[in-house]
Length: 184
Image (cartoon, rainbow, N blue to C red; front, top):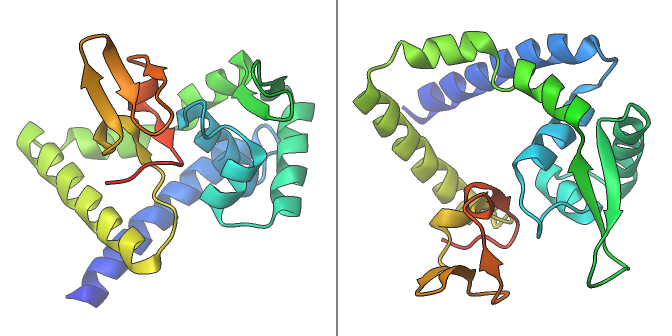
């Protein structure tokens, strides 16, 4: 059973990579550059640094830095200094980067395949895949990188939503993004 599940997930991941790789070729992007761009479009303000991209992708800082330079040279991302700590540089996806991602992530054929599932099947699949992901992250000891609203530090207060780790107010947009500080 484990081999069958692994083969299904691996095959699905490979098909997704193939389809997005073809789209990336139109801009001369390598798969690693596409992955970094996609990650930056889904991460929150605590997770949009070179170090966070490096941790998320599990690659060397040099490889990631070169990929980010290419994305910046193609005007797909921009670098911004942190307002509070000028030593920190945030990486933001530009409008051109967002337009590229809107056409490619998720691939249309994947969206069509998911649409073929009933609503309850989609919900059940999402929940089961989330559970597999959580179990696998715990088993490997890798940084979680989860969606903020599911984090144990996400606190609902009378003033709104706060991060219990940073004690900062979170917007509705913040809580739907990926955070490197996530903890289940």
